[in-house]
Image 1 (tube, helix red, strand yellow):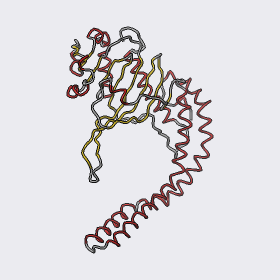
Image 2 (cartoon, one colour):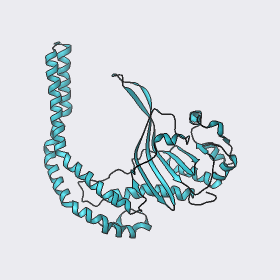
Image 3 (cartoon, one colour):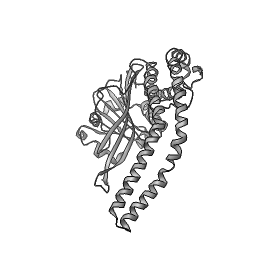
Image 4 (cartoon, helix red, strand yellow):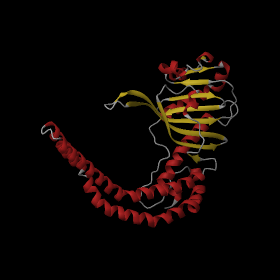
Length: 338
C-alpha cells in the first residue's frame, strides 16, 4: 500500500508517508501472518456458526410456544420449567459457538487497533492523546450554561491536543432524561442530546461570561445558576440574532468577542455541521456544544482485508481537521479581533 495514495491533506502527504513507512507499515507487516491465520480459522468456524445462528429465531418461537402452551393450556409448571431451561441452554450453546468462531478475530482486531492507533496519534505531536487521565467531570461544564437539564449524562471518547498554540479537548457526550418506568419498575431514559463538547484555551483575553444559545425555550433552565449576572445582548447582525440569543455579564466585552466576523464564523460552523450549535466564553476558554451522530475515534479496521490501517488513518485526519478548521475559522490563536 502506497501511503501517498491515502486521502489525507496535501500538506501532510509527504511527511505522513515517511512517518507511515517507518512507524506503521512495519507493524502492519508483523501482524499480517497472524491476521491471515486468524481469518482462515474464522472462515472455517463460520461455516458451522452461521447455520446455527439462523436457528435462533425458530428456536425462540418454538420455546416460547411450548412455555405458553404449558402454562395457558396444560397448567403444567414442570413442563414450563423444562422448556425454559431447554431454550436457555440452546441459546447459551449457540452463543458459545459464536464466540468460538469470532472471538479470535475480534481480539486480534482490538490488539492491532490498540497498538497502531497510539502510534498514528503521535504523528500529530506529543500533546495529542486519546482518553487521557484526569479529565474534568461533567458537573464542571454545567457552569457554562449550555447544557440542558438532564438526569443522566455520560462521556464516551475524549481527545486532547494542541494546534497553532491552542489547546483543545473534544469529548463525546450523551445526555438523557427520565421517561417513566418499564414493566419491572426500572427507570426508563430518553436521550435528549448526542454530540460533542469542544473546549478551547484561547488567546483572546476576557474576564466575563458570554453565552450564545440557540434554544430560546430552555434558556430559563440554563441560566438559573447565574442569570442575575447576565443580561441580554442585542447585536446588529440580523441573521445572527435570528439564530442565537446572546447573554453576557459584560455588554462591551460581548461585542468585543462577537464582532461581525466572529458571528459569521459561528453561523458558518452551524451550517457546516447542520445541527444545533451553542457556545460560551468563560474563564479564558471557549466551549462549543455541537449535536452530532458521528462516532469519533472508533476503529474502522476490517480484519478480512490486507492490513494497511488506511481507513483509520483517513478517519482520524478528517476528525482532527474538523477541529483544526474550527480554530482557523474562529481565529482562536489571534489576540485581537478573534
